[in-house]
Amino acid sequence: MKVLVAEKCGFCHGVRNAISVAEKVLAAQDDVYSFGPIIHNKDVVERLAREGLRTVSVVEEIPSGTVLIRSHGAAPSQVARLTERGLHIVDATCILVKRVQHIAGELERDGYKVVIVGEENHPEVQAVVGCAQDVIVIADEADLHRLPQNAKLGLVCQTTQDPERFGRVLGAIGRGSFSELKVINTLCREAIKRQESAVQLCRRVDIMFVLGGLESANTRRLAELCAKVNEQTFHLQNWGELDTSVLSGRETAGVTAGASTPDWIIGEFVRNLEAFESRAP
Image (cartoon, rainbow, N blue to C red; front, side, top):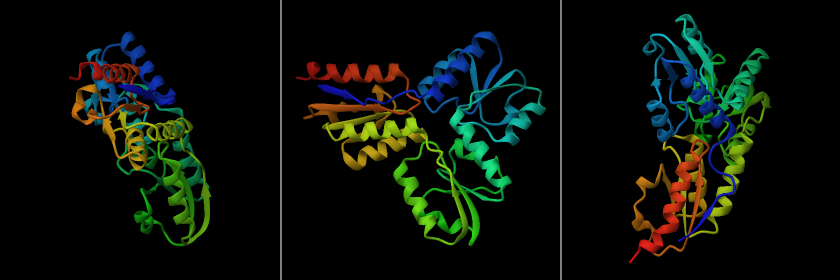
C-alpha cells in the first residue's frame, strides 16, 4: 500500500520539552510524580511509568518528593497547595499555555471579564480558568448565553482549537451585546500547521489515519477536520487498534498524528501499512 505522511505531524516543542524534563528528573531523583498525565498519550505515559513516573490526580496523593507540572499546566491554587506540602516542583508547562494563563490574569486586572473559547473539561482550559475569577468557557455558539450583557469582555482561546471554530465563535460574540471586546490570539501556530497539513493530505488519499491519544484535544481536532473532507478518516492510538478490514480496496493511505504522538508510533504504523499489501492474498 502506498502511504503518505503529513508534512507536519507528531511531537511539538511543548511536548518534547515536557518529556525531556520528565526524563531528566527521573534519571536524577526518586519519588517523582506527575500531577495529571504528563501528556495525552497513554503509550508515552506507560513508558515513563516504567521508568518510575507516578501519575496522580489530586494533590493529597503525593506524600513527598518531586512533582512535575504537566504540559497542560496547573491552576495557581493547585501549585500553592503543592508548595504548602513541601514538595519540589518542576514546571513542564508548555510556554504557549503559560502565555494564555498570564494573559487571563492581565485581562482580569485590566477590568475585563475573561472568556476562553475551548473545552471546559480540558486540563489546559481548567488551568487557565484558575488564573482569574469566574472565567467563562465557551465551546461553541450554543454557550453564548453564558456571557453577561453589555460587559467588557477579554477573549482568549485554548491553544489547540482550530482557527475556523475560533473565528466562528468570535463572530457570534461580535454580533452580541457588549461594551468592549478585546481579543488576543492565543492559538498555537504549530497546531494550525498540523491542521492545514492534515487537511491537504486527506484530500489526496483513499483513507486517512490520525494517530494519537483519544483524550488528546489537538488529535481529536485533527480527526474532526479530516473527517469533514474525507469520510474514511480513523482516529487510532496505535497500530494495535486498527481493524485491517478497512484497508480493503484502498490503494493510498494518509497518516498524520497529534502533537503528543511519538515518532515510534508513527513509524510503526507507516511500516505496517506499507507492508500490508504484500501480506494480502
